[in-house]
Image (cartoon, rainbow, N blue to C red; front, side, top):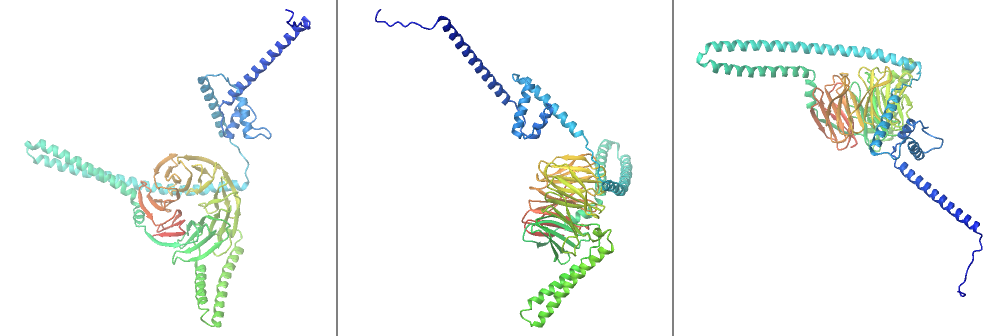
Length: 599
């Protein structure tokens, strides 16, 4: 007992109780802090599990639907998504069941759909210039005249069709009566013992002949429908490769045949445009102005009397000059002087051509461009050029697109030029003033093609988004959208009948759209690769020509969309085709650096 050390507490009893109380309070405060941290962690985990869209535009729409600002100053898309999660956590039950979650998401989607519909229904009107109003009035008057003429011709064709049907019906009834009377006579002549057999035979013969009459009737109907296109189809079946001509060192990208079929324009990736004569297949002139690939060329169809004679004469002079140069090393100095005289003569011809053009411009300043305009071109350098075939440089340059210009097309009236670009827009240019009078946006991606309706009232554009959009130039709105291709639409053309439009796509198919039914009329599984160009026969639209990156050209009958001809000859991708106005030949360009003449 004495050996044990006894420690006595020197702390007062009251103070010891206070220390025990404070330590327990600290423990409970720490526990509450831990519980709060765990609650926040669990809450954050639930918030992080909230499904939100990844596209920033969809995030903004959902924030708008929740009544939140769609964007804060200096906010990046990642921060905006976090803000959307926090906003959603305030309006939803984080402990909801799967069924409740599905119902909430469905209601939210319906709310977003309603917002989108309301947004699409909104019409934003901006006051345009007086030139645009005058343009739309001119378009309306011009298209009304063209449509009246076209419908009158259609009614005349339909009247002939009904007359042919009536004639077929009368012929059918007449032949039926003859057969019936003949059968009655046979019946009287036969013995009563063979009456049953005779009746059976007559019924069989009558049915056979009736079927034959029906077949003849159907054949006559088809014959009548094909009567107008029979000559064209026979010509198409006889198309063969007549000429294969090497053009430029790089890919030939586009082609256009002159209205009189005497000249051909070839554009290339060498930034040049060549003018060829279809008579001797010689280069009459090369136009070097664009700074990048030439993407399209188009002859001005309203200038029917393009005079190629000065260029032909100049070409002949240059050929003689080349022959003289070949003889320079063998002949005397006098012959060198003679060749120099020839050079001066050819330069004199060029000067005369330039002087003639200048006098033409001075004599008629008001319609200067239209009188001298022969063709238009566009390029990857974002520019459009208007050309006279006798000049080295363009007579006008149109600038306004912010990205490469892909296609140009003249309006049927000849007063305006349409262009489409990778800047998601298409434009209309006044050829008299060389000013842009109309710019239209509407595609979400690049536009590849732009074509005009034969009446001039509508235009159609198509591009990377796979849509074929029909625009009414008289009101400046989209009136139809055809969505059927699975990939980008690269080729377009209106049929001369006015109610069909053909589109070709990277999905290798061609679709025929009916403007009256507002739907797909026919789908042609045409090629095995991208469809690069489409063109209807220009006079009556009796057939459709298509080209593709599968190195083939195919011709389709427009009355049943059957294949008429498959033209093979190119060793590279076919980039463009053009059908002559007289429908006698087709010219195609390719990445094999040749263009081919199909006759």
